[in-house]
Image (cartoon, rainbow, N blue to C red; front, side, top):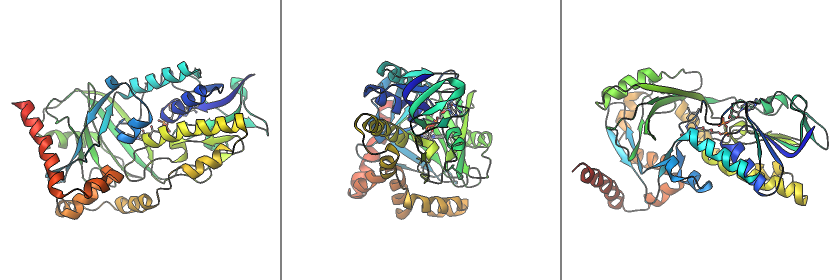
Length: 379
Ligand SMILES: Cc1cc2nc3c(=O)[nH]c(=O)nc-3n(C[C@H](O)[C@H](O)[C@H](O)COP(=O)(O)OP(=O)(O)OC[C@H]3O[C@@H](n4cnc5c(N)ncnc54)[C@H](O)[C@@H]3O)c2cc1C
């Protein structure tokens, strides 16, 4: 039996952020991941909001700066949104996860790829994974939206989801690369949006929809190509997955077992963005675990529960979005001042307040500056 302080199931954003910090703090850490390579079969678009970029100092060659959002109504009209100092990063997600794995390993964590969690037993002193002959003081389930660790220990499970599917296409130079292109369409993507992202070496085109609706990425691909007047591009790969949309789960720990990241519902029910929380809470959990193990601090589950997002208003908004306003209503509302303010606050959240407080001419000036830059580039 090999003994560790932490065994983490899942080598993705939450698990690797946790492993790196815990190992840096001197804990003996083992990560168990069923995939043979962390960059295989990624299930995310991999857009990082600015706050996520601030959680992990990611090498710049793995990301691309995106300055704003171009939002399209079902009738094809579009508005541009940005906020001073704010940005998104498109990422080379497979290599980002490989880099995170290398960082965790460099900090001293042991990574076991091609190894699935199948079950564990716990006593007052330790958690044991008998089939892998591993034992730890704490077992962390960072194993995603349908957590096997959570299921095994009877913890709360995500029950409400968005379903997302995306194609990786050959790069499309005609797509304005300063923007995330987001499309409102309640027929194709009820409850959510469709998107086109100028990624790194690829263009990512996909959509997500409320629970129970099967999103059709091919239908969107065709309408998107037509709408933007772009040529058809070869599909290189497909990504898909479930996005928890019911907010942070209540019972995410039992004794020496606890969940983090998608496994614990740490995903915004409105935007479906989870990377920022998984990085933040993965890292924070490692700090709390090391305080608990080394200094007899508070149980990490209790401390993490206080710091995890509650998503109160966002859960109400999710209910509203699930009603999927008909396309004609999007078309009517689109471009009105309240709708623009709503879009601004969804994409730029707390920064939205700052940009709202700007005089409107400053904000539109910024958008004009962005447009000006593009014209300059073309010239
Ligand atoms: C289509 C789609 C697009 C998205 N786009 C974005 C986006 O652009 N920006 C954003 O912020 N968020 C996005 N999200 C959400 C984001 O991807 C997740 O919030 C984030 O990946 C969660 O990270 P995690 O580490 O908690 O779990 P995951 O990334 O799901 O990783 C779980 C890991 O556990 C492993 N695992 C599972 N079961 C076992 C087992 N039994 N044994 C061993 N290993 C196991 C898996 O192989 C995986 O590596 C998207 C999600 C989807 C589905």
